[in-house]
Image 1 (cartoon, one colour):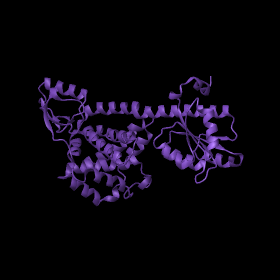
Image 2 (image 1 turned 120 degrees about the vertical axis):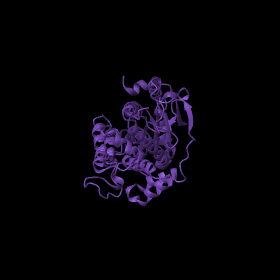
Image 3 (image 1 turned 120 degrees about the horizontal axis):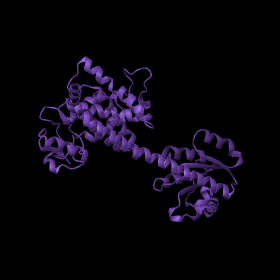
Image 4 (image 1 turned 30 degrees about the vertical axis):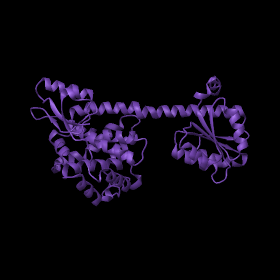
Length: 390
């Protein structure tokens, strides 16, 4: 049974939403009558009206006529592609517009073009196929946004037990990246956050004394600086082995490149060509380092503004907007291990009685972290009380 035939028995309330766009109301009314029993049909009388409608109405498929005043169908669907890349796009054309439709397909703007008049059964079948493609694309997106991200979080949480200083720092940087993504209006920030979390994987190669210097912002000698400079490349190689994280690996590779390109390798991208995740990660990393080296957030932002060419101006402006008046945090409170709860944030580094860092400041409390602390407390290697926020 074809996909369109399966839709015959689907209740209208569960029907996939599609959008029909044409400047002739009679044509829209005819198409609506053909499709309304099998799809949740929305209509718009032109490209501008359709784009406005899509701001509030989610749709799976858009079917647009080619010849419309002000904005033709190919141009309109190009805007849809930029704003809503998961929406599948179909273009209806007359014979005279065939070459323009082929060009639109070749440019990746549309999924199908259909010539008019289009038989109802053909239109139904093509829209059904487009709906199925949207479902698959959406499922793939959910896989990347949830399953893969949870896997990455589990990986970094496990590694943080081995190198708490390095991965506590990664957690703090990731928090700043998340704040910047929100301030910049980036709705889908999972790739930025994954980039920040995995950018420190290479830190497992660093000796503990170097990790502690990095964590506290103390200067490194020449040999130690060379070790630290190799961390992004080690991280990139580790991440590039994970399927579907090629963009993350690229951003990690270029995280130290300045926005203005000064002192960058000849092959390095610069300016807007730098991956957005790399631009945001550089600002968040330097902000975290500056806070450990300078007496105040204000001093850190002043220093970063003085070297503005290193950063994407929009990212730096967002960072200043977030922290320009100083950080606003809950006052830390001292709690007993029995009062510790998931999602609290460790305020101070926690060391064992023999001076080994067990948990880095800024680490978010999880059930596994509580269990680990309880194990050390049972051996009298860590005190029961600690300061937390949240």
